[in-house]
Image 1 (cartoon, rainbow, N blue to C red):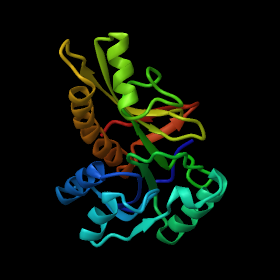
Image 2 (image 1 turned 180 degrees about the horizontal axis):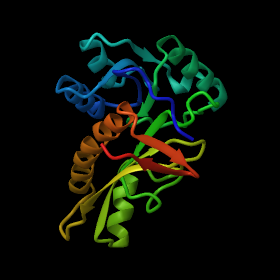
Image 3 (image 1 turned 180 degrees about the vertical axis):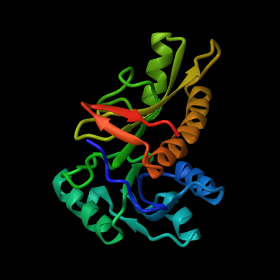
Image 4 (image 1 turned 30 degrees about the horizontal axis):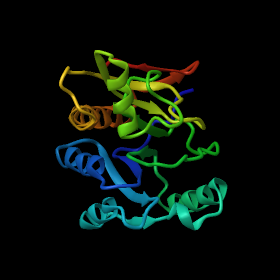
Length: 212
């Protein structure tokens, strides 16, 4: 499957649940020439600072609080309703702590970021510091970050980019998280650029990246 090559710049919707540091990083890369624009930001929490970051940039900032909906289906009804007017080419889950249902509309058009090298330390229950704690407990020597196309399952879907981070003997979950997050801030704009340039196709559950 090959996602339709979008208009330039790429219209990006961001879903988040927290402070929005990855969103700010995306804004900075767009300022520096990344061929994309953030058309809306949707948060699962009213208090998420990411909404304020969007407002400062003049980007529509929409709260869809998960706790106000009886179940995931109703919550996703509200998410899709919030996104629809902005017609995004791509949805990016940047620190979004709930399942986003693609519903056929966003298949091959939704990216997730995971703080490990999928399939290691991934799946239900592996999020945030839980990932880094598990990495340190296991004693692996490298970890990293993964940008992948989202599916209906946790941390599944075709992998687009991965970056490796060394695990140091004196690491704590906090110190390891800081370096993994720095790697994520490299990978997300790079992935968006590849999509904006029409260089990514999905075949048999794997991504193919055309040469520049």
